[in-house]
Image (cartoon, rainbow, N blue to C red; front, side):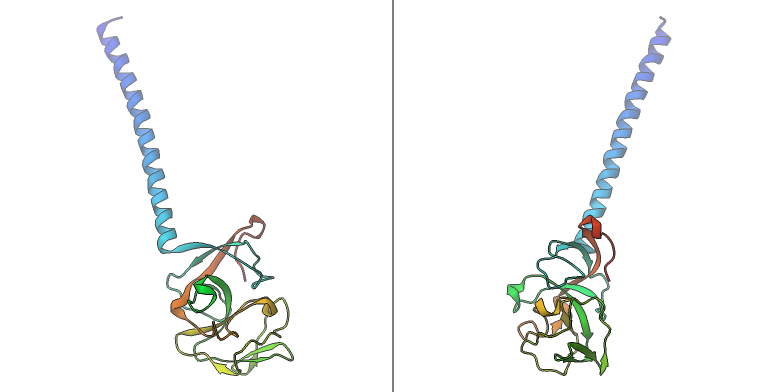
Length: 192
């Protein structure tokens, strides 16, 4: 072997090693960027929360896992939200449905189990049963500014805005609205 041939072989080995090192560096760099982006998204845009209890059945079930977001969120009637209020369940996060927003009048006919918003009966295909459980709020009642009235879909097994200890929920107590259910996998996707 000539000296030139040895030199070329060494260069090829060095180039091959450099290519492998560059490839590894690229992979590590890309994985780091992706993980950082995912972490930042889940810190500032999305949160993962679990459902604890039966108050949202049949829509959501105990131990479902949800992705929520409060980015540019303004509560709307029908939204499923995660909220916490210090005066209610020691500030524990709960999942409920927005039934009425600020300025709307809510009335409930507990005999018929029907909910009215601004005098009109609302269609509630998502509830487990008619609304019969009354608690201590007096109806009709108008939702104050920057607040919402929430109830669970399992109306007769849900502590919600009908209970004065929760009452009207200020928007600042809402941690986000439901984006999608991630677990169980059989229920993965958007929830209505």
